[in-house]
Length: 541
Figure 1 (cartoon, one colour):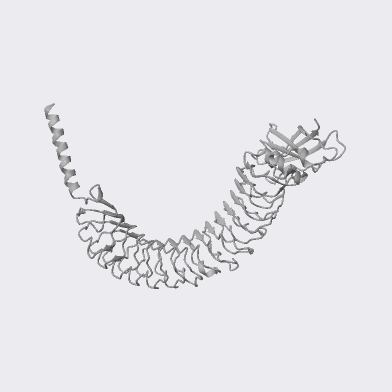
Figure 2: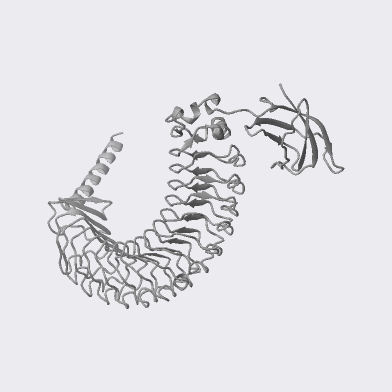
């Protein structure tokens, strides 16, 4: 027992001695972790502490008062892998500041008042893989700045004041995979600038002042998968600009001054999955502009000046899942507007001038789950316009100009029946005067001033009186569930779910009525087990 206690005491004493020795090696204004990571922060840190453990591998300076990095200031730290300076006061870096850091792989100097990068500053950082010099005040980058950093894979220079890039700047960066030049003042790109970057995957050029991209600028970037050009001053996009980018998957062109897409700029981008052309000045879409984008999943054309959607303009986009057409000037949707969009699940048409949506507009987009139609000029919609959208879970119709008269009756009935997926709180009658301001869902049928046509049963009921199968059909009778709804134009809608048959012929027999009722047959989406002929008798209750 005594021996065990003595052993524990000796062990704890050993730990105390070890921790004390390490504590003595950690600068008083810094925190040390795992003996190799040092974190220094606070205004009291005026310069690089001289008592940092020499075996440090990661060194971080956050919001200190350090303003200068002197010559060979880190030469003692041969094991350093990561060196980070964020939100300090660094305005001067000696060309030999990083001398001796032969194993450094990650260097960051961000959010400092640094305005100059001196030649030779990176010459000994031959193992550098990631370099981040962002949100400083850099105006120029010396042509030979990256001459020795041939292993660099990620380079971030965004958020500076760079206006010009030397055409030879990236000549040695053949291993670069990601380059961020966003949020600078770049106006023009040299056609030779990116030629050495044959392994580049991601290129960010957003939020600059680029007015034009010359032919051949991106021709060598055949492995590029993403390029962002949003927030520039581009007015035209020519086919040759992206012609060689056959691996491209994501292209962002939003917030430019593009007026037309009439130069077939996307004809070679067969692997593109994401295209954003939001907030431009596009007034029309020419036929075929999207025909070669067969793998596109997301397309955003919001915030333009489109007044209409040409028929079949999206007919080749059978994999498209999201289509954004918000904040345009669209007044009418034709039946053929969305033909081909078999996979579409999200459709955004809010903040347009929509007055008319033709009855069969959504007939071919049966996978739609979300439709946004708020903030338009709709006064009414057909009562069955959304009937075939079996996957619909959200429909926004707020802030339109609903005119609550008899023409709205069928649609009013539909939204009440489907209020679990419809946002009704903002659906308010704009007229007539006696209903102005009233929620559509609270309007009574009698308030709509409708006159019911003669001989229309108000509560139709249905029964199957005959089922005839083919010679190849399953012996069991189909399971049938039918519901009906009368419409104020004198027709009756019959909805049937047949669980065992796909192809159904419906025959309607009229009983106890003098005026014929319009009828039609349709196909369900059930399993293909047997064709059948069904005969119904419509009766009044």
